[in-house]
Image (tube, rainbow, N blue to C red; front, side, top):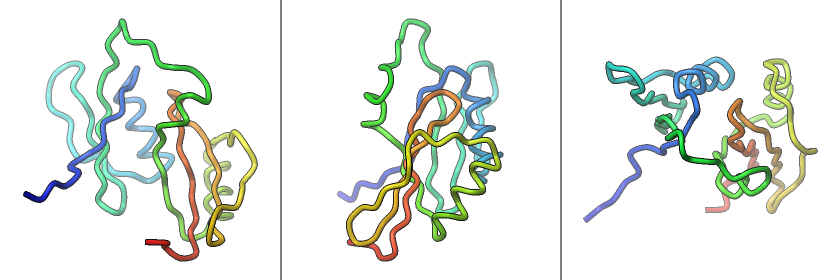
Length: 128
């Protein structure tokens, strides 16, 4: 049996608003939204990775602050400085300064409008 990731699901207070932010700010495209109130929104990045934004149950409470950073979406870019500049121009506020990782990579974190952490990463070469 061969298993493949079909999509990643992200719980959202407002799935439509959050999907629209990913589309307008990060250049993702809408893939599908079933008809009906409260239905999830599926979007896709340029590599074909699909994200599903689905409604948070009213009783659910998100963990706060840096604890949420333990689960993050990582976005690779070919030009780190240009990506940072474009995101700042789009209104993204970065939470820390960029830092260097193994093999000359560069990383910087920011959050989407609902507080989900996004990990911007540049790798001059893939380690795997």
